[in-house]
Length: 126
Image 1 (tube, helix red, strand yellow):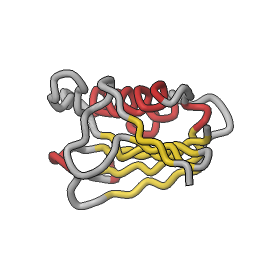
Image 2 (image 1 turned 90 degrees about the vertical axis):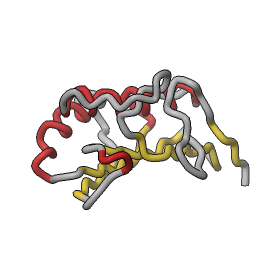
Image 3 (image 1 turned 90 degrees about the horizontal axis):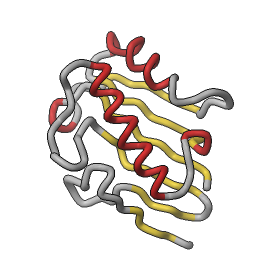
């Protein structure tokens, strides 16, 4: 197996024993991203739009580091603190894709890291 750890200062540093992303066998597996600002470490949670856009910016930073973009994403998982947030998060998330949308599931969970409202993980093809 060919495995390469991806790290960038343009996405939040891991807050546990995991990597930001891993390249393996033609795929990029990105850890779940929350709305942490990569430079300040502050949560960007002024509102749901700000939070979701920061999550997507963090994902973009990981894709950039791997020299790919959102069109390479084949699978996403969206975790929400409450399913009532789905419509707004889906609207913002959807604006990052234009066609050939990735497979996806969205689930509401009891609690997310740092009590955020949104966490998204992605898998992309290189």
